[in-house]
Image (cartoon, rainbow, N blue to C red; front, side):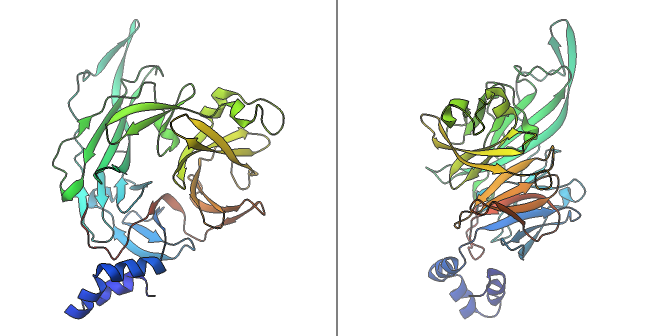
Length: 361
């Protein structure tokens, strides 16, 4: 019944305690009593740690942030695995195993590619490219169990053309076995321009109506059509057809219960938000599961709102990026409540076991 933090301390008492608490049967039994998941969080004002906490806001473990992040605003990249990715927008990234404390520092060097000129012609003019922004995503290949990190480096291009993807440098790196010596491999770019600043997790919002998806197994980009107005039985709840382009541009993506989910701000003035689930990935079938009214006092204007977790009791957790808060929404009572935490910078989910000794980072 004790938390993993206290049990880990017993391992230093004697060999008998160490043997007992590292036994796979004991670890499985403890996991059954503490099903989780835990939230991985970085807090505003604390650049030295990331925290593992439960849904009540209680911190169960603190992990030191790699030194290079100390003054560079480290962010926890959203993941639902047993590893944590800590990165910043400057291109620094580390993978941490919370159970063992093992840390893998990923190379910052970009892979070689053919379009390396700093000056690019655009019609009769020219622009200059500058490294500007990086995002990282951690995933695991289901068939092999191999962990990979996807990196998308954006370059701030003047006179940006959304049909031109030369401003994006996409690459992937394997991080298994505690080694990151294998260089980054270029993956090419998505078919369309990609807007990476929208804090989208499992894909990236692109014009006019598609989601870019990366297959970790084949290391190839594909596209998924977003939901169409006719998917909502021909019209929205208020009887007015929704604009397809607006649906994609005013949305964020997340994963809930194994589904790709799109949160769409349907109407800025009425404060209506629709939650769409991709029910059939092969045939691209979307279903609208929830319509939520959220006044500006709950979801402020221009706030980046992301669905975060669907609880067993039906409540939905939402993360408000700019406010740095985590809200719980009850679809039955239509009431929001705030989780008691400090101001959050970024959050993710940890689905591993803190008692595990497996070293995968």
